Length: 270
Image (cartoon, rainbow, N blue to C red; front, side):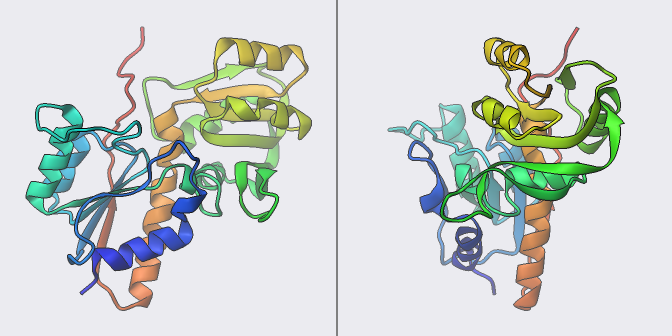
């Protein structure tokens, strides 16, 4: 029997909670560490549709990237959407765990998983941690072969799950691209670092008008903006494989599945 406590031990060894940003809220949200775990579902967002999927799958643990209560709460009443998630999961005996900013920077974390999805080589942190050079914000690496910005945008489109957001691009479509900087999630805080790195393109999510415009005016790289959910979803298959391997090495038989429900909040464009 594999317990929730054993799964948490793996997760917190790979993605230590103390490395999360001060404002973040990571860790076990609900559940009993002594309970057995036979099925795990992975998702980006702890929304009702995902909770319903976990219940339908008879999952014992739902692991998400985004915390349920990022700003805290005084109630988990079922009259609130977040409270309904808690009630749905607890009634079904499913625990809920979040790894957020503590999963962004380490090896096999969110940004590195995005680099893997794009098949980049020689990948290193874009802004390395002073104490651990394998950790850090964002990633930078090289494409196997140079391609145009237009072709790179199509490569990104094909590598990520489809969304209504699509792939937004700023730059000359024929610009040659080889060196790629990126950051999973909202990454405009790394725009200057991407420019300093000499990257040909910087890929991230949630780029705002003024920072993007100023970066281009200062000779920064071409910009590619993708859906926040799609970029971070690339971490889930990597985490699933890592969990399967670690549990199999212990002789445990735990089913690990990645949710394919699109929880990006944007549903269509005209």
